[in-house]
Image 1 (cartoon, rainbow, N blue to C red):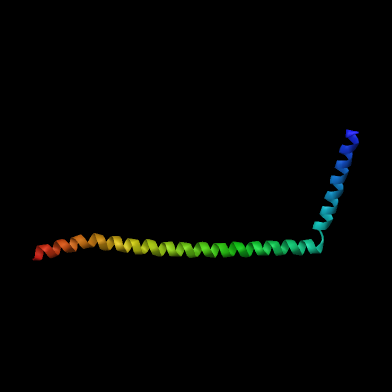
Image 2: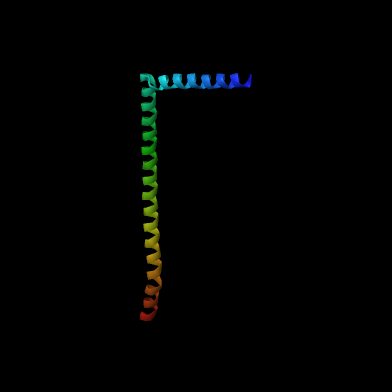
Length: 86
């Protein structure tokens, strides 16, 4: 009894696999797959644009912070010169 049930399940799996392969080879399935990949590529490009903008903003922040640090380092030297000249 269990042996015939297993054979039935194997046969059903084989039939389902065959029908699935036929469905995947159809033109409509191919069009659907192409559209899905196309949308995936568009999402990837949009994500890369967001990442590039974030990198650009980060570069600007680092540049401004570096400039401020240089200004703060130069300020004590300027103050010392002002004190010496008085």
